[in-house]
Image (cartoon, rainbow, N blue to C red; front, side, top):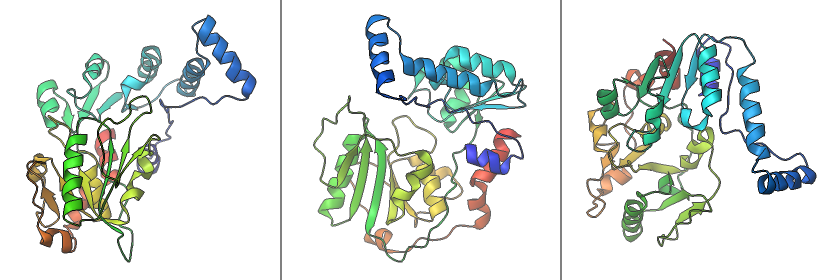
Length: 301
């Protein structure tokens, strides 16, 4: 999003990375932090992160617009400072309230709120905005895989396993990477073509995982009424989509030739024609509407 704002907003943009991780300068500092945590209940990394956030926010005395997409990752004092310095403030919820209930604590702090979840928009009065795509079609002469899945380990894993069992039984070449923290190991037995990873793939790079595949697999979270990034990434890359999200039928880019909906992971049937036929291009006017440039315009208007 930072690159998009810098490129399309005609504004000078200050990027405050709330996931910034402090790296020890040397072994001595690592040992020092160990003793601080054990004997003084202090953490050098947390202290340095707070310093980074405050110093970055204080680059200017005021800001015309503040956009925050993960308020829960910023300390309360640092968030209050950023809001106080901004003439206008916008909060983006990229996850539903059902998924992250703790987001409710921020409902009175910003001037405007955006969400992709239509249910949350109706209930809380948010402005509805879809997700977007920024990566566009890449020329690839041959695809190694039929389907690719990239997801975080959660209760959707059971559906993912059943769908991959269907793929493997029907000779559909599929691959998956499932991210989970080492402290939360995957309990289920996964098919061999589902790989477990412990390092998060940055959002800006995640699209590259799909480039050698014909189809992207999208597994909706329970009670999710909006669309995740997967359908928009598929649109930008001009790839087909298999999804468990029925609300996709309500969007203007829906085309059953490009998008197959799985009603129930226990009863899967994907037509060979869908798997083998080429992608059907959609109207340029529709595709362009969901490009990052136009999403930026909507947020900063």
